[in-house]
Length: 367
Image 1 (tube, rainbow, N blue to C red):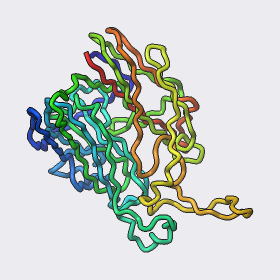
Image 2: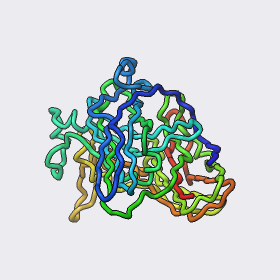
Image 3: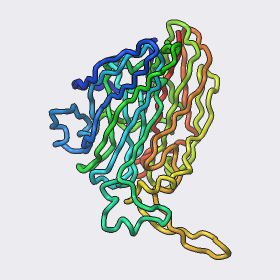
Image 4: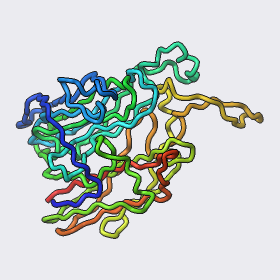
C-alpha cells in the first residue's frame, strides 16, 4: 500500500536488541509468551539521561528505543500491551505512549497504548502531607498504576523482530519508573488459525521526537491522510484514538469537541471524546491540587472538596489510558482513498493557551 501522510517526521534511531527468542504455536498446544520491553526503567529529562549504555534514549531522555523479538503463531493469539508506572519525583500528570516505530519512515508511529500518568503516584503516596489531601473514600494512596490494552488487531505488525519506543512527556530530571511488556496468549482451539490481515498506520500527531512540534492544525480545519491501495482491502477497520490538551481553564483539555471522520467524502464517525469518570482514579493522584466548590445538599449550601484530577477531560483522565474507537469500513476498492478528520471548535494555539489534539489512525484489512 502506497501512502501520502500528513504528519510524518523521520527519526533516525540506533537500535538495541532485546530478544526473548521466537516461538511457534504448533498443533493443539497453547503457548503463552511474555516479551519484556523494559522493567523498572527510569524515564526522565536531562542531558545525563541519554548517557545510558543499556538504552538508546532520544528527546532529552524521554524516548526509549529498543528492538524486541515477538513470537510467530500459526493459531490466532490474543495480544495485550501492559505498562506499570510509578513517579520517581515528578508530581504532575503527563502523557505517554508505547509505540511501534516502523522501519519505513514514511509511515507514522503506531500506538500500542497511549496513557496518562496520575499526579505523583507512589513517590508521594507516603509524603508527610499525603493524608491531608486524601478524601475519606480513598482508604490509602496507591503505590503504582498499571494499564492493559488489547492490541490483537496489531498482531500483523508484532511478529518477529520489531522496533518499539516508549515516550513520556516529563520535563523533570526526576521522572518516572516504568515497566512495559507485550503478552501473547495462545489459543487452544485446533482450527483457530491466524487471521491473514494487514495493519497500516495512517496518521499520528503525537509529538514523540525532538524534531517534532506540537500539532496545532485542527483549529485551521480538517486534516487528511491519503493512501493508494494496490488491491482491494477487504473487511477494513479503522482504529481511531484522540485526546485533547490545553491545560488552562476553558482550553481543549476541558472543552468537549466533536470529531467528524469521513472516508472518500462519506461520514464514517461522529463523536465527542470525553471522560466524565476521572474522579474514579482519585486513589492514584496524591499530589493533585485540591480546593472547594459550593454545592447544594439537604437544603444548605456547603463547600465540597474537589481535586484537579477529578475534572472531566477530552478523552482522558490522570491515571487512565486513551480509548480507541473501532470503525467498520467494509470493503475498500483498489485505488486512492482519503481519510479526513475535522474537530469542531478546536481552539487556536498560543503561548498562553497551548491548545492541541493528539490523534492517531490505524487501518487494518484483509486482501
